[in-house]
Image (cartoon, rainbow, N blue to C red):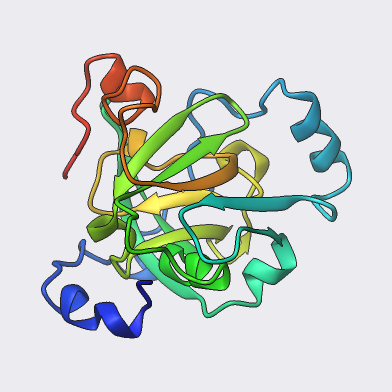
Length: 206
C-alpha cells in the first residue's frame, strides 16, 4: 500500500500553487452556485452541527472506514492561503485549514497497489476523480476551516476539497464520501467527473 513516507520522492517533484499573505484574504469569502444542498441527510447533519456526520472511505483501501469530523480534525493539519480561480470569471483568496487528503487515506490504512484514482462524491450530487499524483500533493486537503473559522455552510461545510493547482470546479463542496478505484470507466459517463462529462477539462490546471 502507498503511505506518506513511501511517496516522499513523488512529492519532492511536485510544484506548489502560489500561497499568499493574510492581508490578501477575502473575508467574507464569496459563495457561488449551491450554498445549501436540498438533501435530507445533509440537512439533518447540518441541524445537528455535523456532530453525527461521518466520511465513508471505501474501495481500494486497506481498512474501509468512516471518520467523524472530530477524527479528521485530529489528523495532522495544514493551513494554506491560496487563490480560488473560478471558470465563471471570478477569483478570491482564502485561508484554508484541513487534513491532507493523503493523511485521511492513511487513516483508512492507505490505498492498495491496484489504486489509481480517488473519487469524491458530494451532497449536491457532484462527483470528481483525481489521480494519485494529485491526491498525494501536499496542498490537496479536506478543509474544515476558512479564514480562521469553521467552514461556513455556504462554502461547503462540513468539508470542502481543496485541490489548489486546479480550477474552482475541481474543488468540491459538501463532501459526502470517498472511493478509491482502479479505473474511472464506471464513474458517471466515464470521463472522470461531472464537469468533464459536460465537456470541461478533466485536469483543470491553473
